[in-house]
Image 1 (spheres, rainbow, N blue to C red):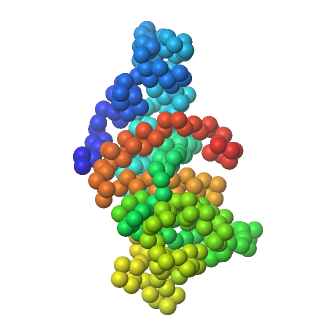
Image 2: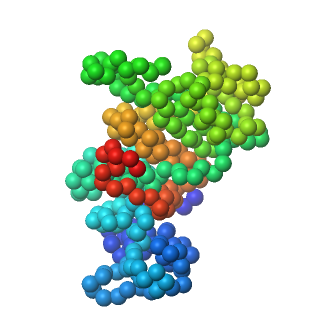
Image 3: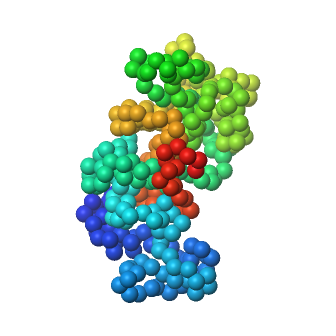
Length: 314
């Protein structure tokens, strides 16, 4: 595993170094036009009016930079700050608040908040590589509820119905032991809601483990096991939900201790962030530098306009 990133690295302070670093991540095999996909018809544009990092494609006759077609497109924030913000969020196990980014980067709070959501979008897995588990592998699943204490909520929110957690948001996670996690913000915790997720995302030959609540969803399947928390049973041999509960503990500490409040509207983005850090963790020999590089690589093909994080469809 390579060393962690040195915060004095020029990519965090020098615009030209930052640009070249991002170009190397986006185009590891050489320049490719983001419009027509042709690699052999590109030339670099010179001149002071354009500035460094501009290219022209002879095939489609369009100009572009490495930021085109990414979450950085048309951003006025320097690439140095994008890279530093990404590294800080990737290297902080429980996340980093927009207020902290605002103070460390010297940017307005609203700008830091929007940057953080864009970075989370880069972390989001667009096309999961097949289901979790498989022959000889174990997948744990469980649900938890995210939200503040009922006594601190406005009266209009205290009577919301949600099985297992009144007024809270339900999160359902599946974790492959020694592998990856996939989390979902679900409207409620019922077999009708959870069963389709498991059918799609757990390999059929996998061994599955849950607590007594989750076991109801997969009751009767020969390769499913459960522990009965209601009678104080938490481990029976290698039948336990310690892996998924360990993930929940980090996620909840991040939400409560770092972000303090996460709206239902944006919960899916925060789950993508916590999933990403878990899936690219040190235990899988991924360093902070590699994790940040993979997050930067994930920005390609994604765009969030300023309006979208404020509630409009994306």
